Length: 255
Ligand SMILES: NC(=O)c1ccc[n+]([C@@H]2O[C@H](COP(=O)([O-])OP(=O)(O)OC[C@H]3O[C@@H](n4cnc5c(N)ncnc54)[C@H](O)[C@@H]3O)[C@@H](O)[C@H]2O)c1
Image 1 (cartoon, rainbow, N blue to C red):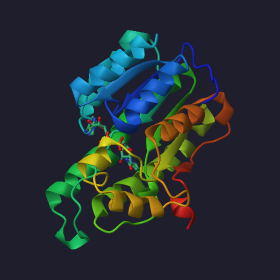
Image 2: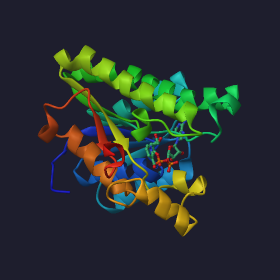
Image 3: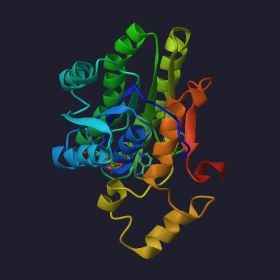
Image 4: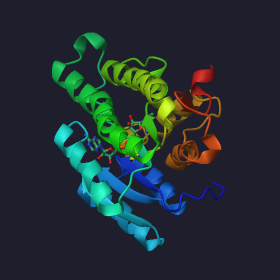
């Protein structure tokens, strides 16, 4: 993407160890921001940090389970201790959960998916917002999904969680707009990441083709395409955008 200077700014990226979060952490650092790479998976998280530092960026790893209030508080505190401020947060960590029809979904799966994808995003916002307000503003981007807007068979908990993320985003945008805090969501289509790999969606070329065909552009997206949108939304170039679900979906929801 073109050069947007974020020099002197500080960003938290949850789920920064791999996939979309890793691409976003690298993209923030490339534009000069200092990054807290937060994840519950430390090995890959430290690799993201090493990659940023090898490219002359600044970053540190913070272990967090975003569904834990105390760990999320520690994540924000650690960022403030390390870099002294907080300008941007990409609340991205998420899980797919089991793929089962609504009537077969277990309470355990429901609670896990809602706990990470929805409660986790809210907990992050709850801890991030007061510090941004103290500084006179900031930008929060929550990772929702195309499934924040439409349904998908077998993904009841996931779809409910992502619809919730969009609602939460809109409420916070209205509440904190007057205080110079912008809150948006990104809604990716199918993006080639370890999440899809684990779900077995990338191994068979016929499956890849079928999923690709669901998008107007007839392909899946790349993590970098979501990451660039996130960084752009945080920049001054997007200064009048708030409360929006921004679809980075190759036209999936246009059809
Ligand atoms: N890949 C897609 O097609 C797609 C599409 C739409 C939305 N999304 C959303 O994008 C986000 C990232 O997805 P991805 O595809 O990069 O997934 P991924 O599995 O490749 O990466 C997710 C990262 O989040 C971390 N994580 C998961 N639960 C966590 C928790 N409780 N606390 C801290 N870290 C946690 C994982 O360790 C991992 O590093 C998710 O919210 C997902 O729902 C993905």
